[in-house]
Amino acid sequence: MNIYTSPTRASSTARPYLPALTTEGRSTDNSSRDDNCEAVPCLSMEVCKVYPKGPLLVLPERIYLFSEPTVGEILPFDVVINVAEETQDLQTQVPAIEYHHCRWEHDSDIGTDLVLLTSIMHAAAAERKKILIHCQCGLSRSATLVIAYIMKFHHLSLRRAYDLLKSRADKISPPMGLVFQLMEWEAALKATPSAQASDYRKLP
Ligand SMILES: N[C@@H](Cc1ccc(OP(=O)(O)O)cc1)C(=O)O
Image (tube, rainbow, N blue to C red; front, side, top):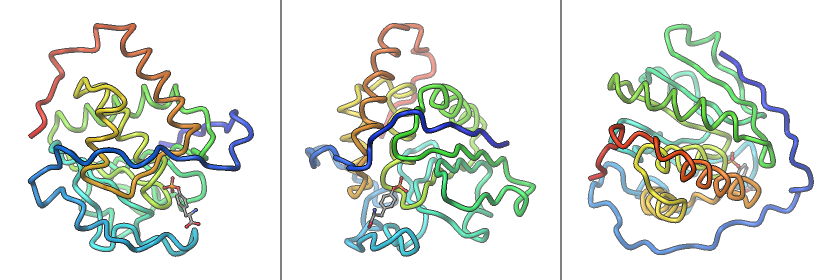
């Protein structure tokens, strides 16, 4: 399944990031800690080694965050969501995997996709599927999607969802253009209290 999202938001060539926030409440679950996310800088679009140990488990419902994977790296997953415009689309190479590709840039309008993609994640999680969320580096766009998911299905504010993910993958840094859209997402979630309390999954 391919979902093309036109980049309609202009002028985000500079990419301001949220400042580093509190690390209070870091997970004690070493399997989802950020040891994987060592200080290996993203030197270029080609060399993106933020997760040198492979996909990082960031949420208990088998949701992993990663940079651009190889075919071999996605084989263990049931569902793969690729949210980068510039990454290779591996769909035809992994026909057995539920593969979604949303071609986001760092300033794309992602609001509609968030509704669909977080629902896909939620449905897959309910079926105990193993889910990989990735972009090019695993820092901005994929992190934005995971934050949106946490906000909706763990019922956390943007700030708390960001802090939670940051405590598990401390290199994440959603660009300000996407953070603004997460603010809109937060407002939309607040406006729909039906945001399914029954869907709540308690975080460890
Ligand atoms: N711009 C970074 C690399 C980088 C590329 C893409 C990126 O976004 P995402 O995490 O959404 O792929 C983040 C960082 C550098 O020059 O090192």
